[in-house]
Image 1 (cartoon, helix red, strand yellow):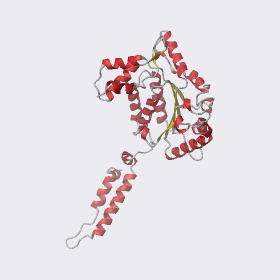
Image 2: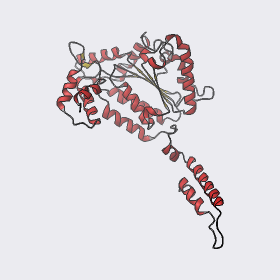
Image 3: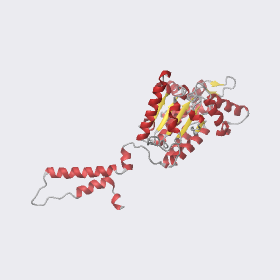
Image 4: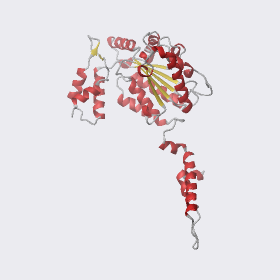
Length: 345
């Protein structure tokens, strides 16, 4: 075991030490010395590559083993930067942590995130990506699909199905722990997403490839009405949003999405065959949550927090229902633009 302690750099040093030293009457020919140094460097490079941790320190690698710090980082980021979404924080951390720790998963992890614009769906998918790969959404092992960008034409749906299968098959073949994010599921053509059904199912291998370590995340506005209906019902009955449990909404949410003709999940086999592990509801954001979003954004830019500006930005948002004015209709989505106006230096 002591022979491995020095690492690849020790291999280079040892190779140089073992070079024959010239005697008093002789000299080492330059070409001989060059060959010896080249051999030592090659040996060191071999040692470097044989140490995966060291190699992956300099180059991004497909995650083969779970880093226990990832779950802690995921929890910390959600606690600090996601507001008003107690269900999301609880479900996402448990689901992702449990999946990454499970060496014998029977299927890929499939999460479907639902809620109004600006409630945090894209942000959470970004945080999940960053908890698995240091480069986050920029990682070569994280793949994003936007329905209106990548699959715009209904008449090309069969071509899209073939391309989608090819993309997923190719990327998982390279990296089993690939992460796929599908945005704007509510704008995707019905039937297209069913083409990936085999990859989400309980197969050990498909054409020699295992998909059981992959993660699929779907983002959609579909089902937001059902989520708001439940939140309003709790509010009108004097109960807080924190009283809402996942069991109060998950089945109703999945059925709402399944029967929504304007959703890419309309009558989808992914739902019918129970291949979506969690339907995660993002509750509509209240006035106090908007102020929290503004504060965090101000601090992230390094600006001085001005309570008056925080209040003015939150006041400028529009809220619904018209009578109660409880929830922001854009969530926190326009906070950036409003800050640019108020902090125009």
